[in-house]
Amino acid sequence: MHGDTAHNASDPVHRLPDGPRAPFLLRMLMASFDRSKSMSLDERRAQYGPDFTLKLPLFGKCLVISEPDEVRQIFKADPTDLGNMEPNLGRVMGSGSLFARSGESHRSQRKLLTPAFHGNRLAEYRTLMAAEARAGMANWPVGKAVASLPAMNAITLNIILRTVFGAEGEDLDALRRLLPRMVKLGSILAATPIPEWDLFGYAPWGRFNRMRAEYDAIVGRLIERARADPNIAARSDILAMLIGAHYDDGAPMTDDEIADELITLLTAGHETTATTLAWAIERLRRHPEFMAKLVAALDAGDDALLGAFINEVQRTRPVIAMTFRQVLTDGYAIGRWRVPRGMHLMIAISLVQTDPRLFDEPKQFRPERFIEKRPDPYELIPFGGGVRRCIGAAFAQMELQVVLRTLLTEHVIEPTNQRGEAWLSRGVAFAPAKGGQIVRYPREAMQHVA
Image (tube, rainbow, N blue to C red; front, top):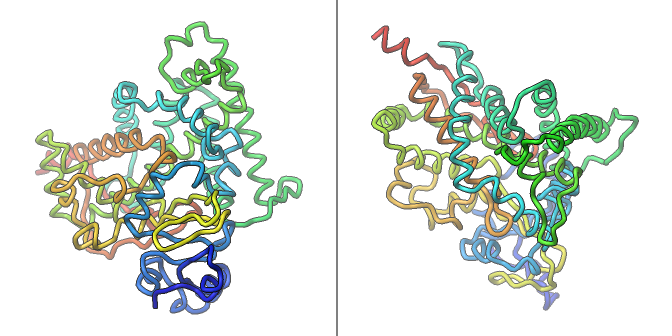
């Protein structure tokens, strides 16, 4: 049944689509006892249409959008009409993070960070990425099924640490030990309405606050040493760039702002990329004919199919399934709907990317579709869109290409006929439930045996 709720019929200013009546947490509790009462976003779309309302923790009643023209409108909207979600990831990243900022503050901060991900600078990172990928894969078990996600997390964390700080040392070793635990807990806290109690450091938020204090101390030392470096102007790492950056009024970034932006880059810059890599391995092992075709293309020096494969992984297995905007003007018009001030719009990435109006046979894993058609930035949206599109999207895409090329040209991946891995929520991100199981052999050894 598609249509408007009774509440909307009596309100001439606000007009919203139907949706399930029960609160999200109650529905999740019901589903834990009876799996038949659990409904995916796909099933909601089938029941209510491409747009529907949903009651979510943290945000309350939201308008879920997957109508293509409306998605395009949202991403093109003026920031005075649609703003940052509240609460946002600034809860865990810090008030100086790009995730926490809105309006002019967001624009000016994004302007400072953009040079770090400019094409010329990205080219400098390519060799570093390949070296870290090669080193990280060297000690993987041979011929044994293991989860690829932890190993990919280690590789992508090393890449972003070296990119951000440009050096090694005890403090970076400490960050390698700290950040995985901090990201895991922070992802859960960011996505759930857990009270922000400290309880002397023993409550979830208390444990996170202790980790954040440890992070601040480490990064404070790194910033202090960088500021004292007489050769900082010649450095190409992101920390040096941020220390030398100035706002339009000439003011430099404060140490607290730098620390918040660095944690944003360190966490967002490795976790989601590693998860996409794990999904890529999960998909490759279940499509052996395509894997053979991809390896042959890479051996011939052709990266076009690799790019298409990455796009298809992101389309069918989006690590982030949704992105949000908050309505800042009352009666905001989008399609047939009129939305009250303060309500959140949830762009359902997973629904947009499986819309049969946009993609033929959307449930089929067919990377070749992106050889035939370049992805539309309002239809393939794994990094969101508009003024809040992930600033590190180009960095992540290049990293995916470099790591996968290294894996497939230097190793042989064993296919499997097992069913695809289920989706597992890790708080903010969705990962393969078994961690993207991989069985690999060094390619040189296999060729020698052959």
